[in-house]
Image (cartoon, rainbow, N blue to C red):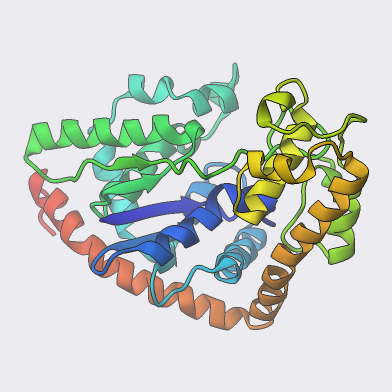
Length: 333
């Protein structure tokens, strides 16, 4: 089993990123059987599909790597690297560009959402980045890819590309399977539970950042949107209460329990009692991460060295697949 996943280096991560993805990565790393592998990468090449400030991209890559390390990714048990240090990603991307079809890419939901009616003004990179995503996965013969519901279409495209390439040129790529953890919660905004918690939300009060102080975390929880009713004894009672459901979901995720278990504990109590308990739990969970992150960012060269080592290990795994794909299409290198 070889698991691969990536994340764009776009700045500070928040509680939704941690509970919805990164903690799942750490759990997979910690439960891997002997001989299985986890690869986690910073998708800095993908960042180029949008305008970037070079100094910010460079800094964010290091900061994102430090955050993953602070959250529990262990470079001794996993391979942590950034794409740009492994040129095979770009090389395979170009080869797969001859297999992918314009129609496939034009139907991608995220392309239609981001480009809207202004597709002609968008970068070629934004249109073709699903092909680079396919290269990211197929390059390492990944067997499983952790994906959320909004990324399943991209993995399906990677499989379509692999199937066509294998059909046209011979068996070259493993077909990756989605790994969707049922334990991964969907964390919503603290100000409007109709939308996901997001770092793009203009309101900082809508999210809990992993770098927030204990006092700021407690303040954001205290001011989080809720309602005046007491908590019910079971999840069904939250069906028409999205903000209440979100706060209960966050508590359960932080505690490693279930919403039903949380409601059994707090049934009949109001948010005047529930929010302080949630704030204490959030602080207890995130404070050690923030402290480790602060220490790591005091030595950015050491973080960069981790990425360099991970890239060297990744390149060794990538080389046979790239060579096989090059040979399959008749390239002499």
